[in-house]
Image (cartoon, rainbow, N blue to C red; front, side, top):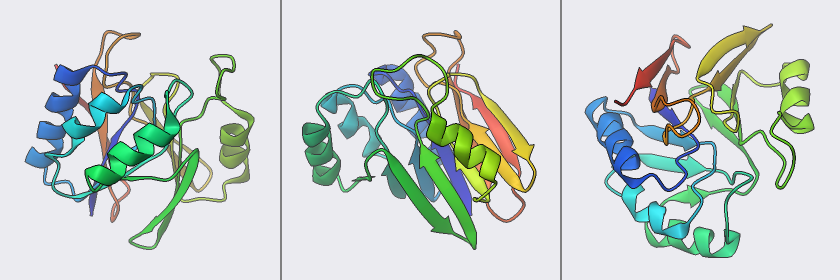
Length: 172
C-alpha cells in the first residue's frame, strides 16, 4: 500500500490543497497526518482526499474538541496525541513529537519510541525537517512541513508499505 504522510500544515490552505491533490495523483490509500493543523477551518480542505485519513494532535493545535467535531463531520479520523496504526503487517506509531506548550525539541515519548525500536515505523512532525532514516529495525519518518514556514520548503512523504521505501515529495 502507498501511504501519504504529512505534518505541520499550520492553516496554509493553498499548500494543503496542493498536498491533497498530489496525494490523490499518487493514488495514496491512507494519509497519516502528524499534527499541527492549527484551526478547525483547515479540516474541510482534507475532504477531497478519497482514501482513509488518520491524524493526531500537534502542540500548536487549538480547540481539540472543535477539531474532533470537524474531523468527524468530514469522515476523517483524529485519535488524540498518539496513534498506533497497523497496516500490511506493520506497526506504525504516529505522533507529533513535541510537548504541548513545550520547547521546540523532540518529546521524551518520541525519543523513547525511537530508542526502544518497538515499532516498524515511527511517523512524526514538529521539527519541520523532512527526513527518513533507520534506527536498528525501525524506520523513522518526518515528512517535513506542508506550510513551508520555517524551512521555505513545502513537503510531504510517501511510504510504500511493502518495500519500506520512502520518498520526500516537494510541493512547490
